[in-house]
Image (cartoon, rainbow, N blue to C red; front, side, top):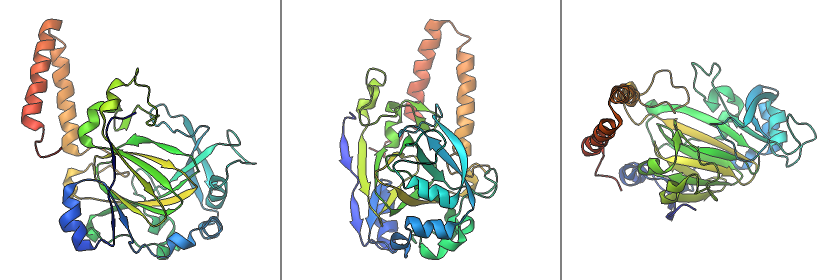
Length: 315
């Protein structure tokens, strides 16, 4: 088990001013209750979504197991008409399936051309636009994307981080979300932006001993709840029921900081990518030294990075 556990705080009836001036600057996850999200929380039933979404084809993840792993890719991509996806995702057992009768489905909506266009529910599913209201807690010009998500009951998404702030709007169903601080990245066994530790509730501590040091923040989301996930906070999402959600991402930094080819909101900032490339070159240079010297100068470099780059303003 992870060592320290904390409940994500919940706030009801928060105004735009309260969020921006008092809560947002803390850069910590929080759940907002009582936000006006429109009619979606009552209207978006399986029958309604099937009817409104129609036969539009969507690309989905299909997994034979509940814990999806983006590192090993233990799933396949398939295409289904939207109405079929909704009906299948709401089932526990399937009469029609790709892999097995208890396979899991996951939709993460895409732009028209995913290489160039971001996801926006208002463009990809215009008939649903009038049903949902986004929280007005950031400027319209900061808006980046709105990602429509549908998950089978029991589905668990891998632990990862995004480089933009976002609201996870739980429209229907229930989710359990576990988050980890960016300051605990060294305990999460990262491969890129994703953690190798899939079973966060019962981790293999012989294989991942440092994981027990990671501080764990938890919350349960019900229909109408909005989870604020600050950029760089790792999150793992478990759908306890068939559920529909919408993530709204926005640029909280100047646009030039972000990778212009990023359509998902998860590519590292351009300055960070350059720094990693420089570090890789430095490590190749160190490799030219005998082991004793390589070890010595590598440790000096780590200390130099800690002294010059680590922040003293975060827990």
